[in-house]
Image (cartoon, rainbow, N blue to C red):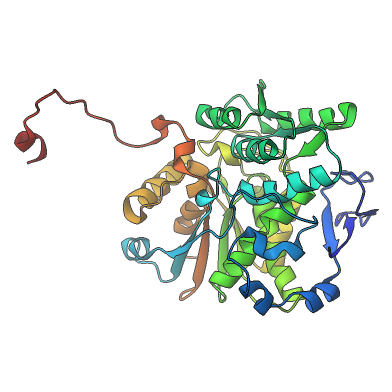
Length: 394
């Protein structure tokens, strides 16, 4: 293992790696695992990685656990979107990272693999998590295979399809009257007051999530931009950390601009970026419920990733998200949930900003089967037993 300590990048407080801690005790900011990069340089090379299967487990030395839990996460395809490029006459390449092909249908499985493994190493007896649905489904699956009792708190607008998925894997679900931020505050109380292990968008999940960045770096070595949907900000900050760590260990030199995309109705990170201010909490409902985080836990880290990489942040309307989702399905054969199509909506809205000739990676974070049927355009026509097919089909 190569980890050194746990640090707060906000106030600089440092904690021993064995500490069971999720937020900085001094300032309340999110925390980060730091590594011995000199040792990593000696122990891992691109050749080492290439000798292993292309999967999440490929990057084990970059995780703060002795071993991961796995149900086949990672190793997702990165495909060229030639139909979309032609349709919109784009002057740059678009590559979709198909994260819906993870076992539970979203990118969350990468983080759960490491986070639940760390919980077990720290002798957790039960765990709690706040989730809009995808993380809850993922944690329920990984907790299930490790016999760790898991309690998921969801906001009142969580999709019924996602609640059923959580229940199918065996977790207990509590749907609160309120939004994600209210659910997050409730589970932090359960950790502080009752000792339940806290799962969610905290430091160990970020460490597992970053494997998506490692994979993009290998699949598209000269990537110029990475478009990410932003809810809590963990995905974009973890992806940027992956690129930084590959450079630090001299494995690869890719340094793309990170672009954060939020739903207009709930866009605290984008507002802060555009006004050059700190993040201010906001509440708002959006069709992309998985991004509905009005007080993002890793919001400041998301802003830092965007700033350090020379990227930008933009917001997209629900209408733009649904249009992008329809285009993905009908032109590229990719069925995404609304939040999963948000980054692509951001590309379309920002296409005059992206430099000509660039290579753009776009995160498609969750499967469309996770959302209610009412979110899909079109209707099913019922037929009699012996329909007139000539009249019907022409």
